[in-house]
Length: 397
Image 1 (cartoon, rainbow, N blue to C red):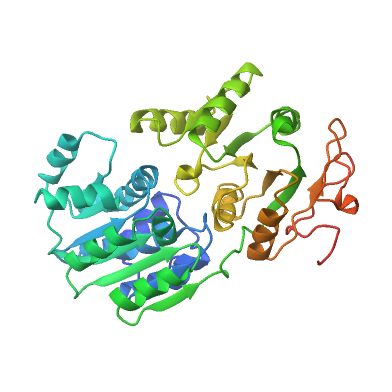
Image 2: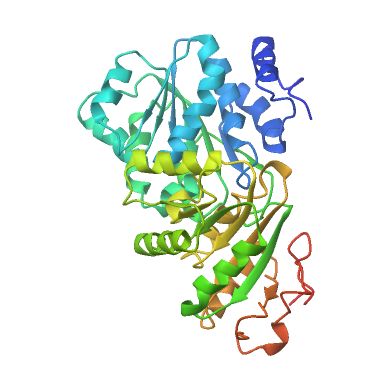
């Protein structure tokens, strides 16, 4: 599917061709024409499907035709910077300035950027409200509002801040909401703040990337590091590892370095500069392994991640989808390995119910056999390779 016949202006088409954007993803193909018509949109699509350009292209085309402004709300600093980078590529030729308003950076720098009259604000809710209270930002001329990764913002407890921001934006506006899942709170927000939104759903909630394979190891907590070391010998590419806590991330990063692996960590105890440095080092190949808490489950857009490791299972089943969405992006193959303790059978079942797939269980030959009291579920690591599409040889449950 090309970008032609979607209503995109010729200048934007030419610019996108220079940027090597030639094929529209399914969410872009469906959402762009509706957005160019000014419709309110709820876009449901898994991570890595091109949602940013699905709203950025129509947004910039509309701003090029008027004097209005746009606001993009995102849950994390990392995502804000990535979204701004993507938007700036197509906004700059139209002399449309952008700015990221995020915590963790000196506010004076952002105030100086605001004095240059940017027309696209990319903001996290907390910093935006701070600037609104200081009367440094007014939203009365915003006519396009985008809520990106809306479900993640709700997971992080931003619902009151989002409601306050929405009340400050003119009612006569276009609202586009993009999310990987569709919880009830999203529907409440849509009915309260949107005008007859059109739902564009590319995949049911809980759908994982098509070319990502899954694998599950049942392992005692004290054996996880040994198993991780053996897995990193088998897989040679870049690895994104998720754990639950900041202290856990620090300990795992230290252990990986002790084993001779180049590793960096990214979590809320790290400054924005340190997080940027870790992410850039991961992108460039300086660090083979990036250890992260869920703050990064939707804030990392890195091509070519071979493996995602869930060292700790996520607190919420939905985060499994977001975590493994960092591999297998844009149709590329990827692999996801999860470690589960023997007492986490219920957590695994919740994930399987969400993604409608049984996670294939593997067993490393050098480690003790563990299970959920179901010995028949254990497969040999040497002879078993997960099937494409995530369905195990156990068949349907």
